[in-house]
Structures are given as C-alpha cells and as structure tokens.
Length: 298
Image 1: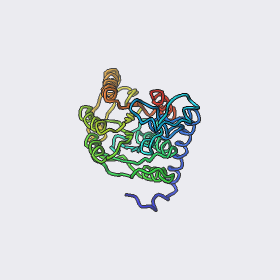
Image 2: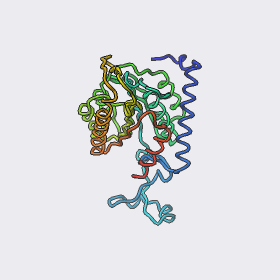
Image 3: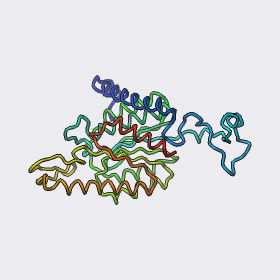
Image 4: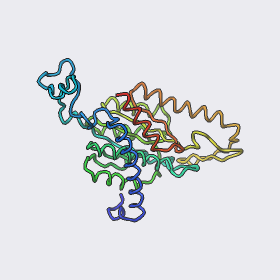
C-alpha cells in the first residue's frame, strides 16, 4: 500500500485533480439537467417519502405532501433513504491495454468510478472502493463525508493493473463481505469465461444487492482495426499468435458480439444493469446516457 506521503507527489495530485474535475463536470451537468437521482432509493427531492401502498400504517401519511400533490406519501425512515455503494475495480493486467486511445481500459474505468463516487457523495450516500485481480487486494470502507472522494481518488491514482484474473472468485469474495443491501458498481473487461462469472453475479443478486456491470473493452477489442499479418499477445499468459487480420476480422467481430450478448442476456434475466462500453466512446457522454436511461426506468 502506498504511504500517505506518496499521495502528495505532484503527479499524483495532478491526476486526482483531473479526475475530480471530470467527475464534477459530468455529475453536475446531469443533476442540473434532471434535478433527480438515477438511482432508485437515493437521497433526492422527496427522498424522505415514498408512495402509500396497501398495508402501510395510515398514521405515517404526510398530509402536507398530500395537500400539495393530491397523493398519499409515507415518511421514510433514514435507513430507507440511503444506500451504500461500492466501486469495484478490476486490476488484472489486461485492463492496462490501449491500442491508440488516450485512456487505457483501467483509466476509463477510473473516470467512471470517480464520477459515480462524486454523485453518491453529493447525495450524501456512503460509497467505498474495492479493487481485485485474482482476489480482493484493496478495500476502502464506505463513507459519505466529503473527504471520501479524495480518499477514493488517492487510492485509485496509486493502483496499477498488473495482476492475474479471477473475476468469479473475487466477486464471490465481495458477496461474502457485504452484510447490508448495497449498490455494487463493477468496472471490468470481463475477459474470463462467462459461465464462470455468472454464478458470482447471481450470488450478489441473491444477497439482495443492486449490481451495475460496466463492461469496458478497448476500441481495438471491439472494432479489430488491424491489417495484414499481426502478432497478438495474451496479456496475462504472454501467449502469442500470428494471424491474417483481414481474414480473421469478420469472425472475430461476430465472436465479440456473442460474448457481449451472453452478458447482456444473463444480466437482463437477473435484473443487473449491463453497460457495454469501449474506450473510443467519450466516457462522459456514455455515463450520461446510461444515467438518463436508468432514471427513466424508475
């Protein structure tokens, strides 16, 4: 683990500041445009109320709200108005790859995590951080205080994606750690057999947690822009393969779509939000589109 002094290095401070500015830009624009939270149950306007349903105690009806809206609302307890979030970052070596984009997959995930962390803290919801490769390597306990975003960004700025991957084992480890209903936001390229990862995702859902799966691939992993004979290297085993890219492209693109569709279908069935991204997409626009679409469902 880096020391506290290492967070004060000029290059780390610059990186944290840049991420913080990006997060504020995205989230402030989103909040100003919609005036509401995309996350069901978060602290927003009327967050201390919910609609009256059969079986609720009529004594809990807020008659002032009824006078304004002509609808029955129940005051919610504090435990109902907040949710704990976990930003879950993949530290596997493959996340360090980029073909020609400014951001690696890991950098891209950090930008998304910073923005979502800012959003939660802005709404006074506690958020923590978990980072994994073949197991959980780092964990920062959730908090809603303003300094928490700096703590998250300090840790993210010092992490390096260099490990081997075991997504399934790491997510199962996380599911065993979580004791209360949480919002789990996962940032990974998911380069593992889907049938190994699915049981771990189900374990999180069976535990009562909301899950958002940000599937981050590099532009080249989606578009396969290579020409002629190219040598490909598996980032974690260093295994190499030489292929004719022109002949291989169409089959590769079909396979990558099948790969994404497997995750999309499984997540739909389990009520997990699946967000397919690649590093050529402006992450602020991609996040805004997702937040708007999620809010529209609630």
